Length: 339
Image 1 (cartoon, one colour):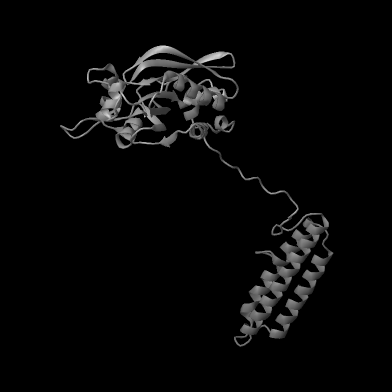
Image 2 (image 1 turned 60 degrees about the vertical axis):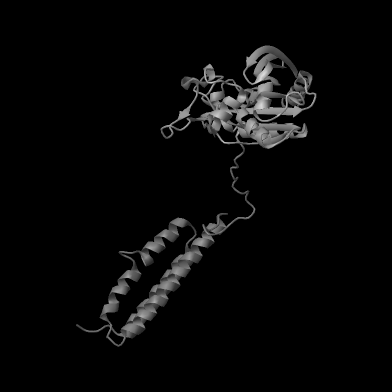
């Protein structure tokens, strides 16, 4: 088989290069450019592919030079194709895919925000802080002493029934632990370690095996306030609750007390708040029972105090106009995005 002369191979490359540049210079739209690309750079039937096959026919000593000339021609034709493509795109008012138009508006970034319950908790902390109450926290897994006994809830009290609490499995012979049923446990822990005067507010999750409905949930958040000083009366309690309600709900919110019973307060009341022409039950309150003060080492003849507990979900629902507190836990972004 006769070897292909290197000069003939080079001349064929030059003709191909000239033809390609001429065709691409004359192209005025995407269709013409695509036709030229297939003719010259097509992977199967392109003219450049056909010349590449003739590389094998060069003499052994000419193959390095022929390969170099082939690559130069291929790169030149590819560059001409890109230049023609960008020229057509620019003339049609478009830009290449790699270009960036800095005058276009940026893509908006979706920003998250705090859950309405978290916002409520932080708002409560801020309001109570302005009233002189320190925000404190405590464990959610509690022992019998802090959850019941120190709060004057004896062993036979129905509030300690296993059906009304989430008890945890513990080692045989050990006192059973439970998920706290109220944040009053935090108040006991603080009073055990501090002397009066005392102004604290505790906010956190509590657990009770309630059937979930529009106003109840087996896990919910509670805010409990405690003030212990000499000379504290129910008038102080009502004043603090009214100031809190007015700051949180806005406007002139009225507070009323209804007689009730809680083991750890005496007297005890249910707290209702009137807002927008409606009375809503918000929680319980009362004067701290002397037995509770004695349990933590306080002298009930020297100091007195009040305590109150409000459901965070209830005040959040009232603030945001939510009819079903279960919506707070459904993780529906369409609902949460409203707040």
